[in-house]
Image (cartoon, rainbow, N blue to C red; front, side, top):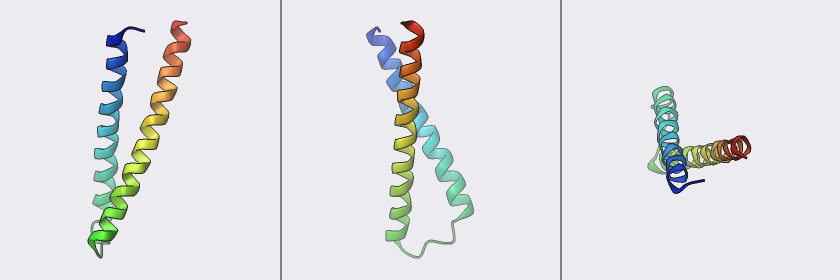
Amino acid sequence: MSSNTITLIFCLGGLTFLANWVCLSYFYFKNHSDTFDSKVQFLKILFYMLIFSTIGVLTMGVLFVSALMFSHG
């Protein structure tokens, strides 16, 4: 694969991560905005969301690159 293709895959992965983070944050904080008792609890929720988003985007990236390599030989 060319360097431009790999760069495009990384850029799409980054955009996917940002879109996932924004959607997950929006829907969670929209429904649970009154349940935070402290900053520690808030940071704990953000950390869990970060881990969840990272695992999801990396998994989809691996599946996407595997499918791309499979289809292009």
